[in-house]
Length: 168
Image (cartoon, rainbow, N blue to C red; front, side):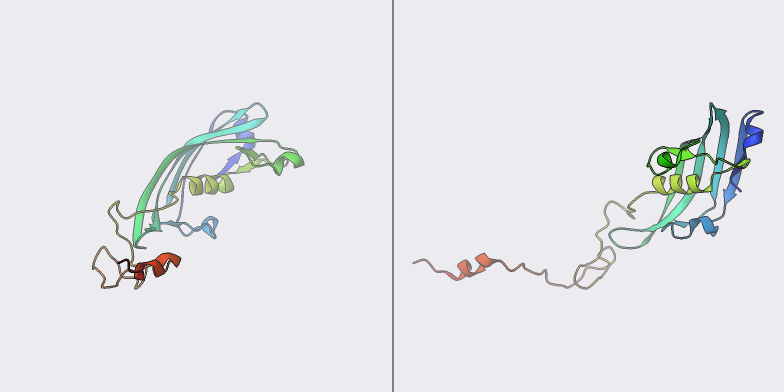
């Protein structure tokens, strides 16, 4: 699943079309809840000593609204460009846009790169609507459905003592 045969790349472009289910183990610990399977449509080809992969990722993710915590579903549909090349041990520690090409074997596993790309493309913060009023900071009531009866807290200030000074 989500693998490219390196020997097939010598003969030309290789297509990868798969669906990764929302309950796949690759999503464990991602902090992301998929509503629909991830549709992966990629094309890989040899470029010099490396492999260039271009394609599209599509799914729907579920997140909590950052103001009222209601569940929000958002579509993710974006193109990806991945480049794999042989890296030395020094280069593998460096962060960047290049993924390591395995030194041995005849398969290129795309799972980690696809997972990373989806996490980068998923919205960082979700809002149910721009008009969302959020939760009351004192009682926790959802201000979108009901007004709350809490009295706003007044901040204590060292200047409050001056309010009691009377000038004649």
